[in-house]
Structure formats: C-alpha cells, structure tokens
Image (tube, rainbow, N blue to C red; front, side, top):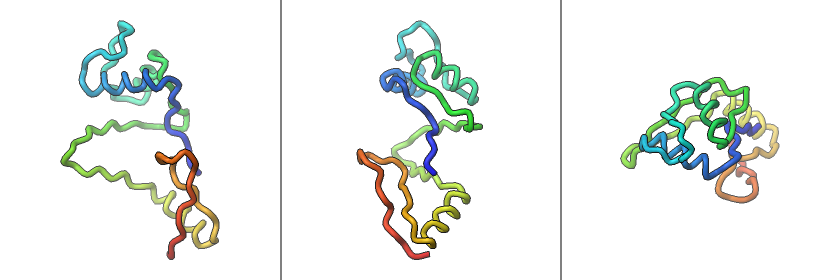
Amino acid sequence: MIMSRIVINDWLAWGNLLKTWTTGRDYCGDGRMYSRPSTLNDMRAQLAKSGAGSIPEWVVDIELVDWSEKKLLIQLPSSRTVSNAEMLLKARKPIRCPPSTATQPLNCPRSTI
C-alpha cells in the first residue's frame, strides 16, 4: 500500500519553507521565523502556520537529510514492504510502484524471487 507521508496544499509555500530551512533566510515573507524543524510536532506546526500542508497522524517521526552533490543517498524500504512485495510477486499479483515523474501509476515489472 502506498501511503501519503505529507499533504501539500500550497506548493509555493512548501518550496519557500524548504528554501528557508536550507538557507536560514526568510523566503516565506509572512513575518514569522521558520527554523529548521527538529521534531515532528515542530514540522506540523510550521506546515500549518505557513499553509503549506500537513502530515498524516500515522507518521511518528521525521528526518531531514542535507543533500550533497558528492554523496549517494539511498532510502531503503522497510523489511515489511519488501516482504509484502515478495508475497505479491509469488502470488503473481500486480505491485503498484511509488509515484514517480510519470502522470499515471506504473505497474512494476515482474521478477523472480
């Protein structure tokens, strides 16, 4: 199952928050200070104040990762996700891939387990 981790209501406000967190300069322009959130509650509050969006209640933690041109960052799936995908493949059922730049969800190619 693909679950939304963040709901974006205003993409411009979201982008301005990201730039503010990254640079420490005020891109939001609403007179409030948005320091880089260190807790989930802080991030939820900033998303609400800025109107950028919200985070579903089932999310329990956040991690902000500074990107570097010289560092390869690989986000590993949970073992539960892998196990569920393997069961679907063994049952020959289609697996929905995570959203990508494509406008429509893709069916992942079948593989042998």
